[in-house]
Image 1: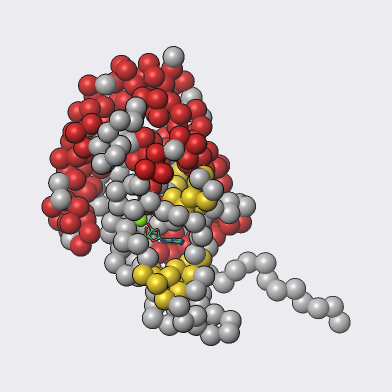
Image 2: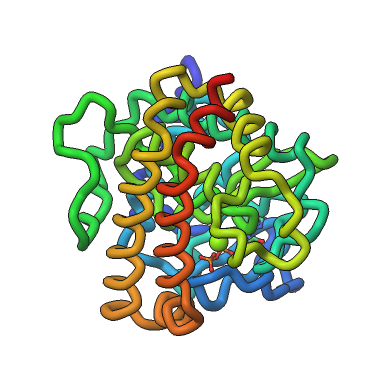
Length: 290
Ligand SMILES: Nc1ncnc2c1ncn2[C@@H]1O[C@H](COP(=O)(O)OP(=O)(O)O)[C@@H](O)[C@H]1O
Ligand SMILES: [Mg+2]
Protein backbone atom coordinates (compact mmCIF):
# COMPACT_ATOMS: atom_id res chain seq x y z
CA UNK A 1 0.00 0.00 0.00
CA UNK A 2 1.45 3.37 -0.90
CA UNK A 3 2.03 5.72 1.98
CA UNK A 4 -0.30 8.71 2.10
CA UNK A 5 1.54 12.00 1.92
CA UNK A 6 0.41 14.64 4.39
CA UNK A 7 -1.84 17.28 2.82
CA UNK A 8 0.18 20.10 1.28
CA UNK A 9 -2.05 22.78 2.70
CA UNK A 10 -1.69 23.93 6.28
CA UNK A 11 -4.58 23.94 8.70
CA UNK A 12 -6.60 27.17 8.68
CA UNK A 13 -4.86 29.72 10.86
CA UNK A 14 -7.88 30.16 13.12
CA UNK A 15 -7.79 26.52 14.20
CA UNK A 16 -4.07 26.24 14.70
CA UNK A 17 -3.27 25.52 18.32
CA UNK A 18 0.36 25.97 19.22
CA UNK A 19 1.64 22.84 20.94
CA UNK A 20 5.39 23.02 21.42
CA UNK A 21 7.10 19.67 20.93
CA UNK A 22 8.73 18.73 24.23
CA UNK A 23 6.63 21.12 26.30
CA UNK A 24 6.61 24.86 26.80
CA UNK A 25 10.00 26.58 27.11
CA UNK A 26 10.57 28.08 30.53
CA UNK A 27 12.69 31.09 29.56
CA UNK A 28 10.31 34.04 29.29
CA UNK A 29 11.68 37.48 28.50
CA UNK A 30 9.80 40.75 28.11
CA UNK A 31 10.49 42.23 24.66
CA UNK A 32 11.62 45.85 24.34
CA UNK A 33 8.54 48.06 24.51
CA UNK A 34 7.20 49.05 21.11
CA UNK A 35 4.77 51.92 20.76
CA UNK A 36 1.50 50.18 21.16
CA UNK A 37 1.25 46.51 22.08
CA UNK A 38 1.48 45.66 25.76
CA UNK A 39 2.84 42.34 26.91
CA UNK A 40 4.97 41.21 23.96
CA UNK A 41 7.18 38.45 25.36
CA UNK A 42 9.73 36.02 24.05
CA UNK A 43 9.33 32.39 25.11
CA UNK A 44 12.22 30.27 23.86
CA UNK A 45 12.34 30.66 20.07
CA UNK A 46 8.89 32.25 19.89
CA UNK A 47 7.27 35.62 20.49
CA UNK A 48 3.83 35.85 22.12
CA UNK A 49 1.59 38.78 21.35
CA UNK A 50 -1.98 39.51 22.47
CA UNK A 51 -4.52 38.22 19.94
CA UNK A 52 -6.05 41.08 17.95
CA UNK A 53 -8.91 41.56 15.47
CA UNK A 54 -6.48 41.57 12.54
CA UNK A 55 -4.40 38.61 13.78
CA UNK A 56 -5.82 35.97 11.43
CA UNK A 57 -5.65 38.24 8.39
CA UNK A 58 -2.02 38.93 9.28
CA UNK A 59 -1.43 35.20 9.79
CA UNK A 60 -2.76 34.47 6.27
CA UNK A 61 -0.43 37.15 4.91
CA UNK A 62 2.57 35.69 6.79
CA UNK A 63 1.69 32.23 5.41
CA UNK A 64 1.61 33.72 1.92
CA UNK A 65 4.99 35.37 2.40
CA UNK A 66 6.50 32.12 3.63
CA UNK A 67 5.17 30.25 0.60
CA UNK A 68 6.50 33.02 -1.66
CA UNK A 69 9.98 32.36 -0.25
CA UNK A 70 10.20 35.60 1.76
CA UNK A 71 12.25 34.49 4.75
CA UNK A 72 12.52 37.82 6.56
CA UNK A 73 9.10 37.82 8.28
CA UNK A 74 8.07 35.87 11.38
CA UNK A 75 5.94 32.77 10.83
CA UNK A 76 2.60 32.46 12.57
CA UNK A 77 2.67 29.22 14.59
CA UNK A 78 -0.82 29.33 16.09
CA UNK A 79 -2.31 30.38 19.41
CA UNK A 80 -1.05 29.16 22.75
CA UNK A 81 -3.06 27.85 25.69
CA UNK A 82 -3.55 31.46 26.88
CA UNK A 83 -4.97 32.49 23.49
CA UNK A 84 -1.93 34.58 22.56
CA UNK A 85 -0.60 34.65 18.99
CA UNK A 86 2.64 32.69 18.68
CA UNK A 87 5.18 33.82 16.09
CA UNK A 88 8.74 32.80 15.40
CA UNK A 89 11.40 34.95 17.01
CA UNK A 90 13.51 36.71 14.36
CA UNK A 91 17.06 36.93 15.75
CA UNK A 92 19.00 40.19 15.53
CA UNK A 93 18.79 43.75 16.84
CA UNK A 94 15.92 46.25 16.65
CA UNK A 95 16.22 49.94 17.44
CA UNK A 96 14.85 51.34 20.67
CA UNK A 97 12.20 54.10 20.87
CA UNK A 98 14.88 56.74 20.22
CA UNK A 99 16.93 55.09 17.45
CA UNK A 100 20.53 54.56 18.51
CA UNK A 101 23.45 56.02 16.46
CA UNK A 102 24.09 52.66 14.71
CA UNK A 103 20.64 53.01 13.09
CA UNK A 104 21.99 55.98 11.05
CA UNK A 105 24.21 53.78 8.87
CA UNK A 106 23.69 54.48 5.15
CA UNK A 107 24.36 50.84 4.32
CA UNK A 108 21.54 49.90 6.70
CA UNK A 109 19.24 52.51 5.13
CA UNK A 110 19.85 51.08 1.65
CA UNK A 111 19.30 47.54 2.90
CA UNK A 112 15.93 48.59 4.35
CA UNK A 113 14.95 49.89 0.89
CA UNK A 114 15.96 46.59 -0.72
CA UNK A 115 14.16 44.53 1.93
CA UNK A 116 10.89 46.46 1.49
CA UNK A 117 11.20 46.06 -2.29
CA UNK A 118 11.53 42.30 -1.78
CA UNK A 119 8.56 42.31 0.56
CA UNK A 120 6.47 44.01 -2.11
CA UNK A 121 7.54 41.55 -4.79
CA UNK A 122 6.65 38.64 -2.49
CA UNK A 123 3.31 40.22 -1.53
CA UNK A 124 2.09 40.60 -5.12
CA UNK A 125 -0.92 38.41 -5.75
CA UNK A 126 -1.98 38.02 -2.12
CA UNK A 127 -5.70 38.65 -1.79
CA UNK A 128 -7.09 38.39 1.74
CA UNK A 129 -9.97 36.02 1.04
CA UNK A 130 -10.53 33.95 4.17
CA UNK A 131 -9.90 36.54 6.87
CA UNK A 132 -10.41 40.10 5.65
CA UNK A 133 -8.37 42.87 7.24
CA UNK A 134 -10.64 44.92 9.50
CA UNK A 135 -11.64 48.12 7.68
CA UNK A 136 -9.65 51.18 8.61
CA UNK A 137 -11.87 53.50 10.61
CA UNK A 138 -10.69 56.69 8.92
CA UNK A 139 -11.05 57.51 5.21
CA UNK A 140 -9.37 54.98 2.94
CA UNK A 141 -6.47 56.08 0.78
CA UNK A 142 -7.02 53.39 -1.84
CA UNK A 143 -10.28 52.68 -3.59
CA UNK A 144 -11.65 49.15 -3.64
CA UNK A 145 -10.70 47.49 -6.90
CA UNK A 146 -7.76 49.88 -7.45
CA UNK A 147 -5.20 47.85 -9.44
CA UNK A 148 -2.42 49.45 -7.40
CA UNK A 149 -3.63 47.81 -4.20
CA UNK A 150 -1.03 45.64 -2.52
CA UNK A 151 -1.13 44.14 0.95
CA UNK A 152 2.01 45.38 2.67
CA UNK A 153 3.55 46.14 6.07
CA UNK A 154 2.84 49.88 6.54
CA UNK A 155 4.87 50.32 9.73
CA UNK A 156 8.51 49.74 8.77
CA UNK A 157 10.00 51.79 11.60
CA UNK A 158 13.50 51.26 13.03
CA UNK A 159 11.83 49.42 15.94
CA UNK A 160 10.20 46.94 13.55
CA UNK A 161 13.25 46.02 11.45
CA UNK A 162 15.59 43.28 12.64
CA UNK A 163 19.23 44.01 11.84
CA UNK A 164 22.00 41.44 11.48
CA UNK A 165 25.60 42.30 10.56
CA UNK A 166 24.57 45.90 10.05
CA UNK A 167 21.92 45.12 7.43
CA UNK A 168 18.14 44.78 7.49
CA UNK A 169 17.38 41.07 7.75
CA UNK A 170 13.86 40.88 9.15
CA UNK A 171 10.54 42.67 9.55
CA UNK A 172 8.37 42.24 12.64
CA UNK A 173 5.13 43.73 13.97
CA UNK A 174 2.69 43.32 11.08
CA UNK A 175 -0.15 44.85 13.15
CA UNK A 176 -0.80 47.65 10.65
CA UNK A 177 -0.44 45.45 7.55
CA UNK A 178 -3.28 45.64 5.07
CA UNK A 179 -4.27 46.68 1.57
CA UNK A 180 -2.47 49.83 0.46
CA UNK A 181 0.04 50.59 -2.28
CA UNK A 182 3.75 49.96 -2.72
CA UNK A 183 4.36 53.71 -2.98
CA UNK A 184 2.56 54.34 0.30
CA UNK A 185 4.51 51.66 2.15
CA UNK A 186 7.85 52.73 0.67
CA UNK A 187 7.18 56.42 1.38
CA UNK A 188 6.21 55.51 4.93
CA UNK A 189 9.42 53.51 5.33
CA UNK A 190 11.53 56.39 4.02
CA UNK A 191 9.72 58.78 6.36
CA UNK A 192 10.77 56.71 9.35
CA UNK A 193 14.29 55.85 8.25
CA UNK A 194 15.58 59.00 6.54
CA UNK A 195 13.99 60.43 8.78
CA UNK A 196 11.64 62.95 7.12
CA UNK A 197 10.85 65.34 9.97
CA UNK A 198 11.04 69.01 10.70
CA UNK A 199 14.65 69.51 11.91
CA UNK A 200 13.17 70.79 15.20
CA UNK A 201 11.83 67.27 15.78
CA UNK A 202 15.03 65.37 14.95
CA UNK A 203 15.78 62.52 17.34
CA UNK A 204 18.68 63.32 19.67
CA UNK A 205 21.90 62.57 17.81
CA UNK A 206 20.19 62.72 14.38
CA UNK A 207 20.32 66.52 13.97
CA UNK A 208 23.31 66.60 11.62
CA UNK A 209 22.09 64.03 9.10
CA UNK A 210 21.27 65.18 5.56
CA UNK A 211 17.69 64.08 4.78
CA UNK A 212 18.06 64.87 1.05
CA UNK A 213 21.08 62.62 0.65
CA UNK A 214 19.47 59.87 2.73
CA UNK A 215 16.21 60.01 0.79
CA UNK A 216 18.16 59.56 -2.46
CA UNK A 217 19.96 56.53 -1.01
CA UNK A 218 16.63 55.00 -0.04
CA UNK A 219 15.02 55.84 -3.40
CA UNK A 220 17.84 54.22 -5.38
CA UNK A 221 17.88 51.13 -3.17
CA UNK A 222 14.09 50.67 -3.28
CA UNK A 223 13.91 51.66 -6.93
CA UNK A 224 11.35 54.45 -7.21
CA UNK A 225 10.62 55.37 -10.82
CA UNK A 226 11.19 58.86 -12.18
CA UNK A 227 7.47 59.53 -12.01
CA UNK A 228 7.32 58.39 -8.36
CA UNK A 229 10.29 60.64 -7.50
CA UNK A 230 8.60 63.68 -9.01
CA UNK A 231 5.30 62.93 -7.27
CA UNK A 232 6.88 62.15 -3.93
CA UNK A 233 6.61 65.41 -1.95
CA UNK A 234 2.94 65.95 -2.83
CA UNK A 235 2.14 62.30 -2.28
CA UNK A 236 3.95 62.46 1.05
CA UNK A 237 2.03 65.51 2.26
CA UNK A 238 -1.28 63.72 1.58
CA UNK A 239 -0.05 60.55 3.29
CA UNK A 240 1.13 62.50 6.32
CA UNK A 241 -2.19 64.35 6.62
CA UNK A 242 -4.04 61.03 6.52
CA UNK A 243 -1.76 59.63 9.21
CA UNK A 244 -2.66 62.64 11.40
CA UNK A 245 -6.36 61.76 11.10
CA UNK A 246 -5.69 58.10 11.84
CA UNK A 247 -3.49 58.75 14.86
CA UNK A 248 -6.00 61.18 16.32
CA UNK A 249 -8.84 58.72 15.74
CA UNK A 250 -6.89 55.82 17.27
CA UNK A 251 -5.90 57.92 20.29
CA UNK A 252 -9.54 58.86 20.86
CA UNK A 253 -11.08 55.44 20.30
CA UNK A 254 -8.39 52.92 21.26
CA UNK A 255 -6.53 54.78 24.04
CA UNK A 256 -3.48 52.89 25.37
CA UNK A 257 -0.25 53.47 23.49
CA UNK A 258 -2.06 55.54 20.84
CA UNK A 259 -3.31 57.99 23.46
CA UNK A 260 0.15 58.09 25.06
CA UNK A 261 1.78 59.02 21.75
CA UNK A 262 -0.89 61.66 21.14
CA UNK A 263 -0.41 63.14 24.61
CA UNK A 264 3.34 63.19 23.99
CA UNK A 265 2.72 65.52 21.03
CA UNK A 266 2.91 63.24 17.99
CA UNK A 267 0.17 65.34 16.31
CA UNK A 268 2.46 68.37 16.29
CA UNK A 269 5.35 66.31 14.88
CA UNK A 270 3.09 65.14 12.05
CA UNK A 271 1.83 68.67 11.27
CA UNK A 272 5.38 70.05 11.20
CA UNK A 273 6.47 67.14 8.99
CA UNK A 274 3.76 67.98 6.42
CA UNK A 275 4.80 71.65 6.45
CA UNK A 276 8.49 70.71 6.06
CA UNK A 277 7.69 68.46 3.08
CA UNK A 278 5.71 71.26 1.46
CA UNK A 279 8.42 73.87 2.01
CA UNK A 280 11.14 71.56 0.70
CA UNK A 281 9.24 69.99 -2.20
CA UNK A 282 11.46 71.42 -4.95
CA UNK A 283 14.66 70.52 -3.17
CA UNK A 284 13.41 67.01 -2.46
CA UNK A 285 12.55 66.38 -6.12
CA UNK A 286 15.95 67.75 -7.15
CA UNK A 287 17.73 65.45 -4.69
CA UNK A 288 15.75 62.51 -6.05
CA UNK A 289 16.20 63.20 -9.75
CA UNK A 290 19.53 65.02 -10.32
N1 LIG B 1 8.90 38.10 15.91
C1 LIG B 1 9.81 38.88 16.53
N2 LIG B 1 11.11 38.55 16.50
C2 LIG B 1 12.05 39.32 17.13
N3 LIG B 1 11.75 40.41 17.83
C3 LIG B 1 10.46 40.81 17.89
C4 LIG B 1 9.42 40.07 17.24
N4 LIG B 1 8.24 40.70 17.48
C5 LIG B 1 8.54 41.78 18.24
N5 LIG B 1 9.86 41.85 18.49
C6 LIG B 1 10.56 42.88 19.32
O1 LIG B 1 9.64 43.37 20.29
C7 LIG B 1 9.43 44.78 20.08
C8 LIG B 1 7.98 45.14 20.36
O2 LIG B 1 7.10 44.29 19.61
P1 LIG B 1 6.11 44.85 18.52
O3 LIG B 1 5.46 43.65 17.93
O4 LIG B 1 6.84 45.73 17.57
O5 LIG B 1 5.09 45.70 19.40
P2 LIG B 1 4.43 47.16 19.18
O6 LIG B 1 3.13 46.91 18.49
O7 LIG B 1 4.22 47.66 20.57
O8 LIG B 1 5.35 48.02 18.40
C9 LIG B 1 9.87 45.04 18.64
O9 LIG B 1 10.26 46.39 18.47
C10 LIG B 1 11.04 44.08 18.51
O10 LIG B 1 12.19 44.61 19.15
MG1 LIG C 1 6.53 47.65 16.83
